[in-house]
Image (tube, rainbow, N blue to C red; front, side):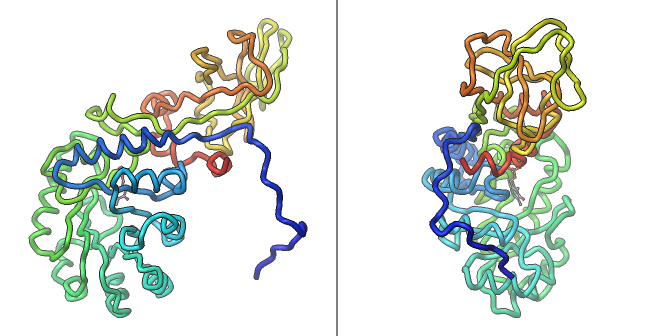
Length: 358
Ligand SMILES: *Cc1c(COP(=O)(O)O)cnc(C)c1O
């Protein structure tokens, strides 16, 4: 039942300017895709755009990736399809979780977005509906989704019209013997499957060399500025810039404290700023202690706990700052991950929708 009511007879006016924002550097995003595509050699790079482009927003990122040259876009859920279809033709979108129900199959057929088939039951469900072109995931050791090598000879799998035959690496960000084992298993299975294209590597896998590239690579993290392996350092550019304004300036007296649980206490009088950014925006509590925000080049240490909508910084080193001045979160992902012990993937994907919508 739709419980919405109309309280405004006219449409809501446009919201006033926000006090925090996520800026997506489109040039850096396009350059990262081109770099990953070039590193993929004769293979072409697709783009993982699941989780709203890892937190950066489908509307901001997908058109840029498409213009840069990406030809295949991977989401996890059927609910993520509509946003991508605003920018991309259906045959270029793939849904990694595949059809879990008849409703999923109907949605796939109506939208003409092919699923990734991950199991015999998904294959049967797809075949029974006369599904047509789909993708196929082989499990080569990560043990999440995908058919096993021995299931490839099942009639339900042999009946599929496979566009992309793929597998996924478990340890590509490490120099693990498992990488080659998975690659060998995928190569062996490739001889058994009729498919238009073959695809194994995520971002990190691209750096493992030509043996891992096949026809298509599927970078996600590195598109958005993540550096999963040393080979990418200095080549992948920061894409996400988090900025927030000072919304109040205060002066603490010696002995006064800041924030929940009074975790910071001033030893001398000091000028502090309350900033419009909190854990609801994805600036997690783990990002607080020992870290800082930047006013230009000036380092402003964070004081006390991160609140839901606010953090407090020490303004001692920036006496010229005032209400309305913008600060930047240091969001170079490998550094930020090291500082906070939160993974690069998580730092991106927890960016709050509140920031994306401004
Ligand atoms: C998320 C995902 C990717 C992208 O992985 P990154 O490590 O972010 O580059 C590629 N393939 C599959 C199947 C995925 O689920």
